[in-house]
Length: 319
Image (cartoon, rainbow, N blue to C red; front, side):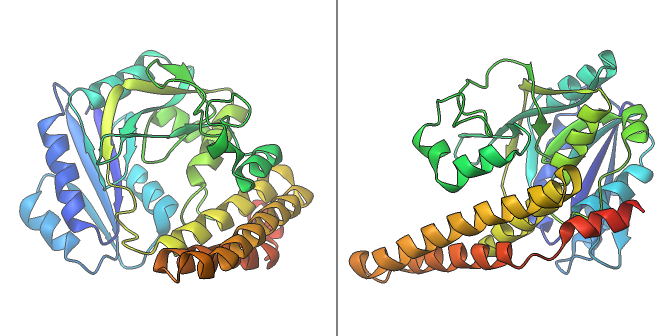
């Protein structure tokens, strides 16, 4: 077996069908195994897989394990020494699988590599980033990354300062698609299941860096991504979940004071933006988008100030 592709699915049956068809079409000369963990979907995903994709190894969980838990279960049941973590709302393009698998197989110092990821409208999605730092959070909360995307300072987090047309080492790769090897996985350990959704990819790449492995962006490998397939229209919940995950990351890797500082930065940014949209609503008219903008920023600020002691949670997990 040349490659095990590990997919976690939750209520995105139709997108998963497209993903699996693309794998069948573009597996090239690779002998590919696909392992799908279904997180208790209610849309007939398991039945579809059983009927239409009998070669796929299906693990039907009775509960939603989250992305990290589902991925770890898929990897446990994969048989290849080369692994590809892949979102179900993606389609792989020609030779993407060969190129990703080939890089981690040829270069043992590369712990993980990821492809160029494109949105449905053809725009590049930023999937390689700098590790989270408090000064980058400050830039993000005040929108300086959007105002000066080509600055190597203000555009550092999403690497918007540079063209994404050359392979290069990066700090962390989006979990939408990551290739690695069994040897690396066993040494670094599985995804941290304390992250139910979001930041588990940052955390794992951070641990790769601590173990001395490189992380590479490989633009010659290309995939398409229909972002948010499992969340549907729950965009506000996605935003809140991503912030909670980031608070946990800071607490786990940088300590309690760093988590508090991150929360204060996010709270301040949320209050400023929420207040701005609250004032601009009557000026621009009570449009649904404006009301939504106001609401989510205040919800983010409330979440940030809640201080759920995520630092202590990670300490309990380690003990």
